[in-house]
Length: 259
Image: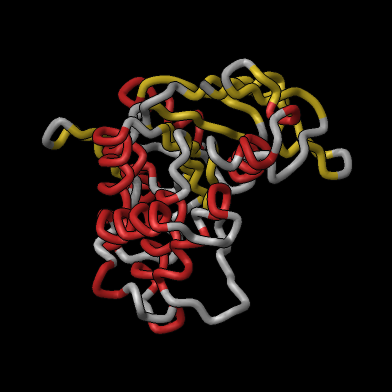
């Protein structure tokens, strides 16, 4: 289990993350939601140790992550950042192979290649394994990066806005794959999302941040409520039940309020 205790990060005098304490429940999808500048990505980066906190701590199975060796941590927690730029021309299979670095140190074994091929199959990328990344669509490229994270074979996967710049089809495809990782493989997924309907439909739990603080933290159905969403986003959001899913209708809420 990952436990965050009184975590803070300041830029100048501004607290981007302000004394945040949360527990990440194992075997679930937890979505971080909230307005721009709420501190979601910064919090995720500190949880993964990509960014140092100014105060507070992150515990992995009750051990401070600062005291865990990098090699060990990379076998337990993986992260996919917003910007994934590589400076060399790689095929899909070569990129996915990088996910085995914590185990192979760059020299892929037969067992590593079995894991790579399993990840390619899981992400439906076998036909594209020899294609170069710059030849792929945005959705195909994002699937390749997620395959790289999957092949790292960590219990916890952190994803920072993985749906950015993707169309609806590819966004749904990736969220379904993440749901399968949790349901079929028992992974723990923490994801930063802007689309509250994706958070509503696919998450088990939601953490809502605003101005660097956690203002809501709980089961998805407890957070996807009109009164809670207004507190988070400062706007009226109507919630409708559709096929056992709570769908947020906000596209014309301002217009309705003016009529």
